[in-house]
Length: 321
Image 1 (cartoon, rainbow, N blue to C red):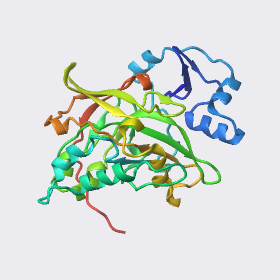
Image 2: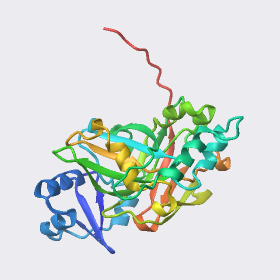
Image 3: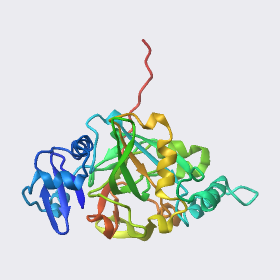
Image 4: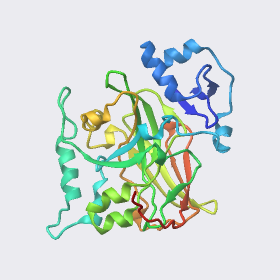
């Protein structure tokens, strides 16, 4: 089962090839909260609502009518975060950026920690991963909308990932709604200067969708990341995700995010990205304004596309009262 959110209001449920409006709800966020309040699954609540009108989901997506699959009505209560060095093969690009004279960067050391302790036995928690913050819901970008690189950025590059969406229940318990494709847009040139600039490089928008997969994440995901320029593919590479291709379990990554009480405030929405092993930057590719990023995987339905936009400089001065 897949869910999509209309920008104009409305929830779409796709099962198989048939997509229908979910009657009675204007947002996926409200749908999830209602399911929690009623103590039923999303599938059961949707079935109870009855069959809504059929829609052409692909046409809606192509027309830019779809939003992020889940969005909080107050952007300040939607948090975008992620983990890095979580996929087998993900350390090579980072290590080439940050290798030290001893021959092993801190990135490679952390990656090896994940290989050795990121998949603990049931009932135990493994080593904690690298963690980063991308901002609030202000930075959550819908499919086909622009991923804006700041005027001061040194680069704007894609990171094809899987993201989990979580709502915090009234008792402070994180509840996973589902998974989507994500483009964890970053500034890799800034990061390459020094790995301590990673935090700066991640304070960029990220895009999600168009469809939210409700249920467990497939263990083996075979996706494709590509960049189009003037309608032609100028860079393309497969990417792998799912636990079969990761050095951490999803449960371990979730634990190390939600172990902080700060992230368990009732009513908040969290979007957590699980990392990648594929970057065009690692191949020496230089993106340009107007390039279109595309992330796709059969398990997630429609592809995620976003153009690269470069912001104009906006000078400012800090004021005082």
